[in-house]
Amino acid sequence: MTVLIQIAQFVFIISVLVILHELGHFIPAKLFKTKVEKFYLFFDYKFSLFKKKIGDTVYGIGWIPFGGYVKIAGMIDESMDKEQMKKPPQPWEFRSKPAWQRLIIMIGGVTVNFFLAWFIYSALLVYYGDTYIDNSKLKYGIYVDEVGEKLGIKKGDKIISIDGKKLEKFNDAPINILLGDKMTVLRNGKEISFLLKDEVKKLVLNQQGKRFITEALPPIIGAVKENYAAKSAGLLKGDKIVSVNQKPILFWSDLVGYIKNNKNKDILLNVERNNELVNINVKVPDSLIIGIAVDTSLAKDFLVTKKYSIVNSIPKGLTQTMEALTMQVRQFKLIFNKKTEGYKHVKGPIGIVSVMSPTWDWHFVWRFMAMFSIWLAFLNLLPIPALDGGHIVFLLYEMISGRAPTQKVLEYAQVAGFIFIMGLMALVFGSDIYHLIVDFFKK
Image (cartoon, rainbow, N blue to C red; front, side, top):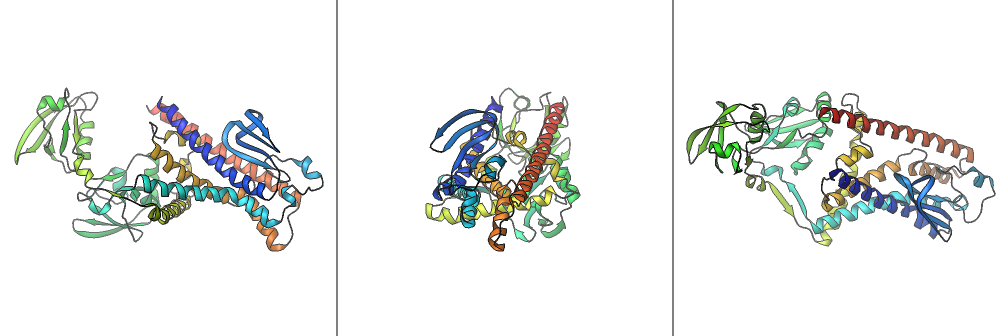
């Protein structure tokens, strides 16, 4: 059931984005009296799941869920309709329109993607506000795993800045560390700076989404569950774990680690209770669950929620949109870096489905849609033939030089771009399937 919910969320997000992106091409085409022959959600190779002709346009749903398209008469696109292009240009065709009109038609899709993201971010700020972990309020500092320590970070550090920029939201720390070059922390009262090595970032990426850095919490018990070993042993809410098997414990995550490493063994907990120290023996079961939970009230102290009015949400939404765009561009630093090997972790549809929320979560859906809308805008602007950016480059060339590329040049470019994109998709899908198989056998 979880997988079906994840797939449903992904299909919903993609469907909305594709329809609105193609409307960005469709509407200006219609305004400039250009004939649009098809408007499709998903691709319809050989047959359609649904289609209906209204006026000059066939509206339909294809069976290959990898996007969608509008087929504009007199335009060299993925349909490669050479027969139509051999005929004399008609006034209602794309090729007969002035270059500036064709440019507006082509940039319409990415324009819609950009403004959609802006609108969603602004709307979310009004409805939910902006909730994040305030980095300045992490009085216990941060917690890192072994890979995080290899980056140079220590448990209990407090992050001051990354690449000279002060860190306000701790939620942004993981991605900023991966994209950064230098980090400054407060450690034992002293500011310490160190370089973030690409070789270690590779290890972080290899953890496949596992958090290498989290907010540190003290080992204070917030709840003890009935019918578990902790309850039977006598642990109480409010107990602070001082040591495990006489080894000092400073953070809750260290306690969790000790429990996981002592399956089917007795562990000796030295507990501070009412200013007194108490020794308690606990047997760790096969499940590795002894029935205690961290005091989450401590974490609430770190959370900040800023409320926004409609007026204030508009500029803030634009800022978040630009930050998301900048982050998308910066990630190419990881993807194409031979040392980090980020290209091995690029996710296609299968991989993206796996990161969807396991339950239907509208907040997650809208935030992901905004982020993905910006991603699609950026990708479509790349100057690759077969993408909007490729068409835009040829149109700009025509407007600057005063002469259009020949039909043959456009056809060859379209074929080359299509082959490149299909090859890239094959690699991404292959990576998805590979990781799916590897993850299956790891279970």
